[in-house]
Image (cartoon, rainbow, N blue to C red; front, side):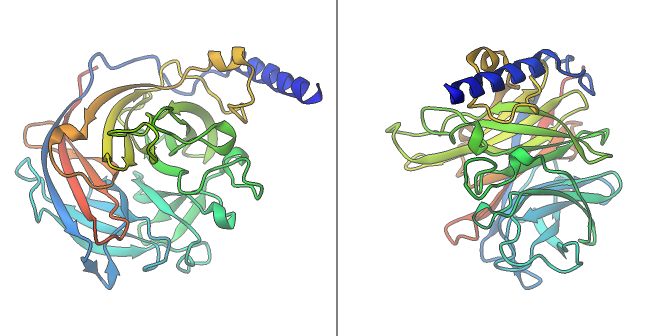
Length: 381
């Protein structure tokens, strides 16, 4: 009886918060009149054997475009295991409106430095996503390491690699020794994006927090959380529910596998994004899907500590973010690697915007770093 009363009490509290949400800090109700149009314009591949400045060029989990230099910064998810944690500056040649083999080359390497101005120790971080600010600093999200109770982080760095500041991580996302709440190992902050006006920063978990439900399976989705920050203050503002797709399988629904939210890209200042989901299972292999996402009418769940301990009436009132499939990469009819990163690039000769995706080769000789280029036409709105 006591536990039942406690759960009902939690549900009542959650219902109160849902009924008394503060006004959103930016307009979300305007929606794009039509969906973006996307066209594949080529690819380039970097072999796993590639080295640069005595480091293996691999684990490239995300990249971001620098319009000032025309170059890109690509983060390696090396946990300072193969070489110190780092990001690469890379050139991507889209001058002819296409991307071809040999069109991507590393230019420089920058080592990330901790608060003591020294490289991060082995296995002390898992950098997965990167974004560039208008102040020419970079933001990096790390998944942490639950096996060693290392929490995820969102940090701002100078382009020299020096740490500037850390943003506050809400307690519900932090790992706990009992492994009953917080992030799951290797399924935490995989994505990060800034709105064009630089007012808001968004990060998201790849799959559900332990207290929010199970990971994705071939028969069910997973409850990822999108965390919104006020970028200037570094303070969390809101959280939204993002439902991943189930794991893609080609035969038995009982096959093992994983699917998760691996990237977000803000399209405007009104809550519109591209999201990237990556699924892997045997024998289906890799499945990559790109979605258009809108926060319009999505419920702020930041006051809800656990999605599994909710009264049904409260749970039914939660509105997840809206998402619409834009592209299933299998329709490209090319071999797909472990695509995890995504960024908007420069305008193309035809006036459309470029979109670049990149794969994490896991430092595996069986994989490669695959860079895919697309033309993205955004509707006027």
